[in-house]
Length: 174
Image 1 (cartoon, rainbow, N blue to C red):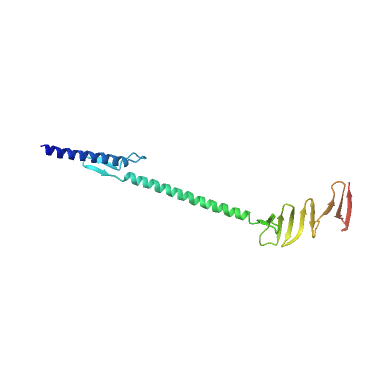
Image 2 (image 1 turned 90 degrees about the horizontal axis):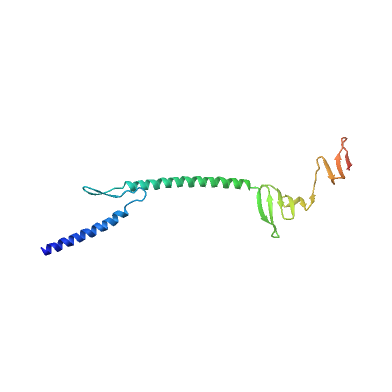
């Protein structure tokens, strides 16, 4: 009997160790979101259920779909904004002159007529030719057309104006 008790004691100790081991494994299968177990004990033994795994996979799948949609929408929005910015700045070019000084050039790239703004003047360009410019408080131009009149001074002032008879007259205004 003593040998039989020893054998029973050994089997009982082994069973207790397996139960303790299974208890740790079962605790790992508890999911925090739904508090459901992957292993359920029934009268016939243990049942392994994958419903909570499927629910978790479905939730992650939905989240991925949502994030993909959000990213697609964000990419589309960024493309739209990028195209709008490109369209708005198509006529603006920042360059450097031969002396290394920066300037801004306004005008369509295929057009010869452009406006060049530097730190010291504003140039009206026709190709590489400066046809008019403003430097300080003075305007210079190769050809200037005054449509109605050309005035010098504020008050008093002189102005050139075409008269009713078609002649050009110099007038004085006090």
